[in-house]
Length: 315
Ligand code: MTE
Image (cartoon, rainbow, N blue to C red; front, side):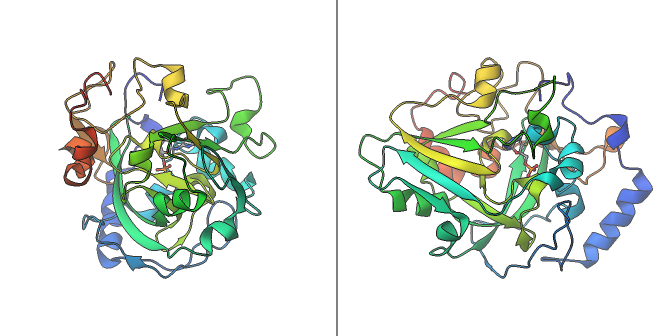
């Protein structure tokens, strides 16, 4: 996100028009969940049956091939194609997540421990990246609140901090001379944001387990915030009294704030946030731009979290 000046795609990533028109025809014939597919990891992803949540948008989902090949996951490189090309080396099992800080029941839980008591549901969410593009993704997951409540937050807990895996042997972006970020990748939410029913911990997408490049085996999805808040491959969740530092804010606090709510009225210092390009709706000269919606269109559910807060100062 800091690497390029313009928030758009290089020529090499522009899909020829004939190809995307053909893709659209195929897509038109395949509604809803698709069948089995092998992902970049080389593993066949297991199909998961789940009820679709009422929080879902009825907009057409982005093609799975786009959502799994146009990614930001700097642990695997800074180019959009790098995560799909390089994330095969990530080992998403066995996996455990440490929950600590201001909780009555700190624990290190395996993925199996985490999933045992939860019912996965499908949530079709819009995801708006700070760079100016968006997708519609059918996630499989469960509310983050379910997991946080199991740890029993203390009254003093006001924030939640998240960390991604640090494992240079498996993550080429964490090795070598050029390190675009300092690791671990960190994110944070206010506790009330973390407990909001829209805030999802995802373990899958498109009816299958998460591909590595999308944050296997467990990632956050906060649909009313810019995509970088949706931290991937989580290994630690900490409850805190004070606002935690986050990766992008630490790197460039004038460009990326703690809140990072999608807001068409507050521009990024280097580009407007008023419109967005939906991946799959053409690129380059053919790119159709849609108006960006306040809170990414989730204002009815979340605006009250920010009553009285100056959203220009708290970007
Ligand atoms: N999480 C980690 N650990 N590392 C990252 O580089 N990129 C973020 C977010 N989560 C990122 C991350 C950004 S900028 C975006 S837009 C979304 O992941 C992209 O998610 P997707 O690739 O599943 O669409």
